[in-house]
Image 1: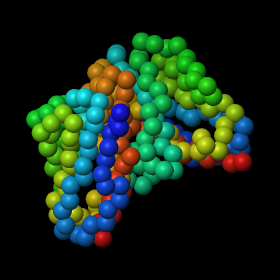
Image 2 (image 1 turned 120 degrees about the vertical axis):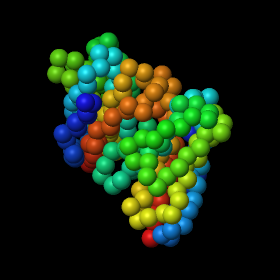
Image 3 (image 1 turned 30 degrees about the vertical axis):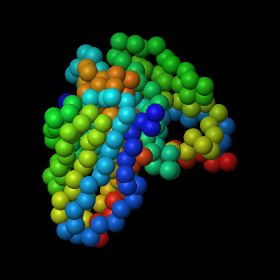
Image 4 (image 1 turned 120 degrees about the horizontal axis):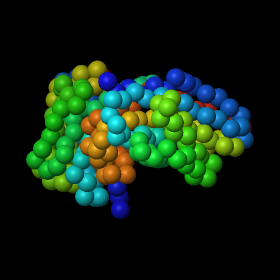
Length: 110
Length: 117
């Protein structure tokens, strides 16, 4: 099992550019999440999904969009990147045992 | 309101010392789950343990042990005979009644543990 796979691992964007962070899991989990982690801080929930076709906002959704067309994939879209979106992004999926995380995407907006 | 407090921002120990990372939580749920995660310098988040609110038994896994005390709303994590590879940021987290639905997962700010040779 690959678990949760995130791509890319690193990315530099210019202000105003857009990009999609990819997340895929092969554990057949219904619940998937996107978090951001700013330096020295814990995780803040951006968006989550409880199953294919269902998504909802977390604490910090502004500037982001998600879709969940399949159980496996949960991409995060950044529109009009801003310096405040410089962060490390984690995708996660959960079952009753806990949350399983991808390796993270380090995004810098310059 | 739910809250997780990890009062220790940074801890530095010498190899082979024992070290305890504190976690205090607040919740009004009668059923809840507590977690510990490790984030090594490489950045990934590694699941360590899940504990539900009805199970106050302490757990030991090798050099790791966890002490859950509902009376003090604490879920502390002890590393015995620490090693350099234990150097990481450790996060404590709390979720509501449905552990799978962790949109209610509340994270502490983490404790950065440095183990020096």
